[in-house]
Image (cartoon, rainbow over the protein chains, first blue to last red):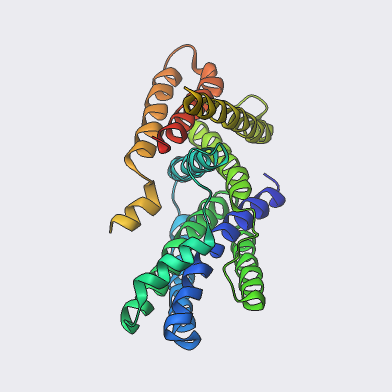
Length: 239
Length: 58
């Protein structure tokens, strides 16, 4: 598998998650101030770094490759299928697109005045959104022995989002979050499908070349599903 | 705890779709038609994903 596939999947997934984390941190910062909000975010990121180091060492320390492939593959399937389903539902109009402004207002409403609760919201927000990034870094990095590269892509995405957020000081609405989720969902589901079946004993036709074919399959059938669900919705409204 | 579970595995529909796809294809892999799993696995999983997307609007 090429390093570019790892960097693209990890980087795009990380951007989606960091944008959501930034919205929470911004809402908290405007309630209890930037120093406390940044303190909570840094504490969460340090927790994630410690988890990456510990998780990476554990996974690389003598676990059978097929077991690793199976566990990582199944995790990626949970992740990818959820992301893809959500992206299809949003693209077809069955549920509204994720609105960062709305999420921002909702978080601010929840926080009014309670400093320790606000700190915890920022910590938990960055930790939970970052946990998804962590899982993808561990899953893709450990499996392909490119942990440093995957972690660097996730860190690069964090710097990018922090810089963009720092400049505009508003929720990052212009990021095409759903399209990114669609693409990354298809990629992660393809990696998950490949590794899980490989671990269970399937010799994939074309070996590694099956991965881009799987990505294309999930993307194209996903787009077809968007059209079908959109048409179904219009018919439902007309009836 | 619930947020952590959801982050790791998703909701019960995601778990059901992934597990059902795995069980069906595991059985196929243990049969003489094992090679077919390369085609049935993505097809069954995608059908489940579309069902998950459809039921989100219900």
